[in-house]
Image (cartoon, rainbow, N blue to C red; front, side, top):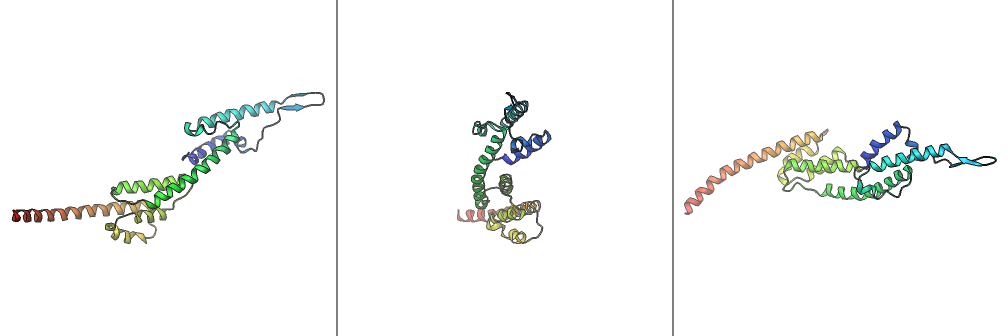
Length: 205
């Protein structure tokens, strides 16, 4: 159900194109099954056509929903019932999902993750929140990404935190460049440190 908004954005244009949107919105209610005349009643042909269109639409909608979700919607008898039930189900699911995603988004730290992995994780969480209906602004994504870095990244964090018009692409480029600098410095430190350690060990021996 985490792709409901995507599903809805794909379904609505199709329904509008075939002039079927009124069925799910209830603006074209089901007509009476019989026409009552002065002497007798007869079947209403408009009713039969409405039921045929609605059931075809109901089947198409059910077929477009994943199996784990559709089992919760099998009680729906009309396309309107299905549409409203899916929105209700999505609403309950979304609130729980947004709460979980927001908690992870604000709690996550780079830690032992590689910089590329960390940046992808933050972007994926941001995209998931947006898809769930809780938009994450560029500034919020940048701020939270910087907040999750270790102290060794403080020089670049100070440089970027108040930078105006910083894009996510710029942020990634700057952080990856700084990561490369750190790796080069660490390599130089190791090169200079290891001979000293070897000399000390030989003197002790």
